[in-house]
Amino acid sequence: MHALLLPTLLVAAQPAPADDWKKAEEAHLKNVAQLTFDFARAGEAYFSPDGKKLIFQAEEKGTGNPFYQIFTLDLETKRFARVSPGVGKTTCSYFSPDGKKVIFASSHEDPNARDEYAKEQKARDDEKASGKRRRYQWDFDPHMAIYEANPDGTGVKRLTDGKGYHAEGAYSPDGKSIVFCSNRDDEKSLQLYIMDADGKNVRRLTNAPNCYNGGPFFSPDGKKVIFRSDREKKDQLQLYVIDVDGKNERQLTKDLNWVCWGPYWYKDGKHIAYAAADHSNPLARPNYDLYWMNVETGKTTRLTHAPGADVLPVFSPDGTKVVWSSTRDGRSPAQVYIADFTPPRE
Image 1: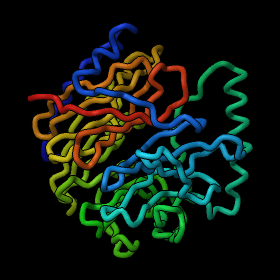
Image 2: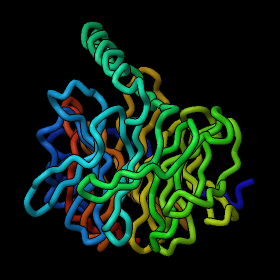
Image 3: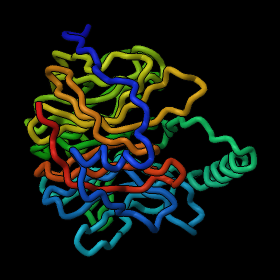
Image 4: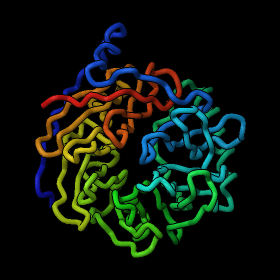
């Protein structure tokens, strides 16, 4: 039962003309710059607590592994370093609040992890030969577990136990807890859980059966969790917020013609940024853009207007910058971008 349904105020706007879309973004995004170049693709970046580094996922060139691995980027020196072991799949990395640890999800302990490489490469070759893009579908790998490590990749330690998908983790502001997504209780039902930072004392947060609940983040005060779920209709993600004790859950978006996902809190705890696209036309490829929302009123403001996909927005700790994953021109592979951020006025 949802305590409150806030109507989404999204308007199915078309991308701005080629000469105008960059100008349209300048109200809230200035000095847009691409940060990753040397990867086949890259995305889902998060700031370190001091705002000087990013941790993100990317596909390395020339390794034979077509799946993401985890890297850090020093924003001053522009130097990259791989954090994850380099085997299997990875996703969803995050810095601890004191900057001394990172977490990420990985399948590197799967004894057959390398067997997936050839399957993925064949699928890509078939896609290229056909000239048709595959429908994007996230792989809930049953060997995915959450690991802790030092920011340089040493001291890797497994935090979640048992076979099943355990991923999409994020620390609480005090660093004592981690919220994550798992199908540990039912392989067909992905729920949110909170565990202590050492992996102990796991407790379930959501209870919406036979659906996906994921992408969670604690609010800046640690009292709430924002997340996405397809409980209304399969694959049609909408946004929700819930108290950390499992109470007062409420739905923030409710328009099944749209897919809304990747929410992230702004520093004031009153606003979020997220990605959304209109899926009402089955013949048109949805164009994802970034939006800003007041979580109490539901008021939204569009932030990006690029012809490509803009997703997974994340703010710097001081709120002055935003990073996100983007194809920008709609033809290039996704990379990580950064911009100076000016919040919409209300």
